[in-house]
Length: 178
Image 1 (cartoon, rainbow, N blue to C red):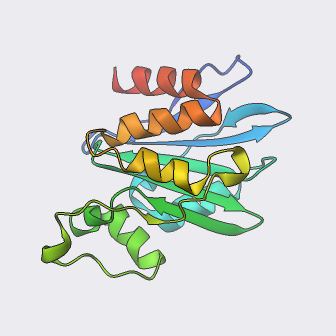
Image 2: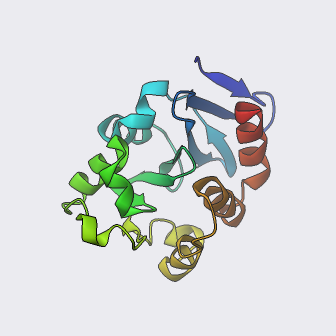
């Protein structure tokens, strides 16, 4: 699948990379001059943490760029780079037993892949305070992640709403998954 642009003439622009084989997508966002902007990511980055970090680090932005990556509605990853420092959040550490991107995040964080005995407990890993400077603190992020009935795409929608770009996010994802 190629890359698709949505709403390029609007003040908020989103480009999305999608891997249809795994229903994975990535949206990279940053604010510039007070407006949300998003630039294209290659499809392959939905499975490549180092590549995601490098791509996000190249983006401009007033508070650092970030990527939101949904893998098959099973889990999501946030990658944010501020002042050259990557900040990473994995919504469900148990995903590392089945998904390459999650395993890469766990490795990046210096954690062990959960043992079989630990697979019953869904826990996030990484920087829960990744958006504190944008008004979403670690406790609020924890509350979003603790909703065990919510799928990854639903949690990302909540994040987008809380951060102020939900309409754009929903339009792009709806068009993508259409």
